[in-house]
Image (cartoon, rainbow, N blue to C red; front, side, top):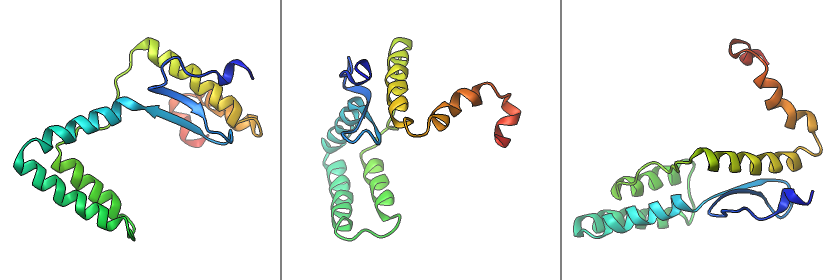
Length: 135
């Protein structure tokens, strides 16, 4: 398993195993960067700052004892106040292939106790699209 656990060539957008080898971790620093830039841009206006501060205060208060679904609603309110775009990262073919290789390595380790489950996506790829719902 030597090559499976080498550090990613571009750790800012990568997949790796957690310390226990029981879960994968997707790292996408560009999303955090874009989020902070959106927040700072909206914060630059007095009106935006007040609206964002109001929603952040409500979110901070809810963190003490959040109710079901409340945090999602409050996070969306902050995102709306800051006019944030969707949390997306565009990738080219080279990056997609690199991420696929990293994901394959993670899947191989996560599926070590259930190889049939890890192989299932390969099997699904061979099933015609209309039959996938029954698989």
